[in-house]
Length: 182
Image 1 (cartoon, rainbow, N blue to C red):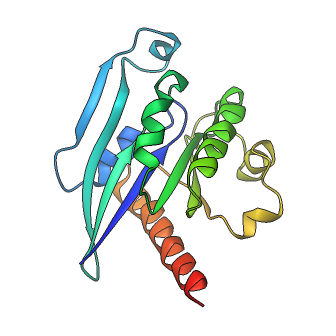
Image 2 (spheres, rainbow, N blue to C red):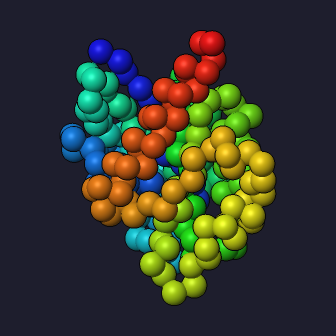
């Protein structure tokens, strides 16, 4: 049996907790508290430590999902959660371009802590002011490396979409391990 640790990161309100709740096979352990800062304009509650869920995949692979808090003031939790992770997903809300720079700083933070596979999930693409995938990738400053990093549109409330995003990352983790072994 293989155990994979996957971290789901990104700005507040990008869909991290929702994605984990949508696909977890257990009741999600969460640390949601009433939002008391600017996050309260997006949602009533916010994650202050982490979310935790589990998912069983084919070939006897067990997946542990850890959702990070989206606010920078809780970034000490990011350090703890990314430790010993096998990969991570950064969710970016397509309709909030003012958060793209922050999303990029989350990516850089994670890349500076661990050299592990990652992917970018673009959420909220159904919103009227949503940016295109290409424009978001440009705003996140991804150039030639986009061939090596999976990007996909993700609906965190849809089981199939959320599962596909996680499966994409797991496949990327597997491919990276094979590449490193050769």
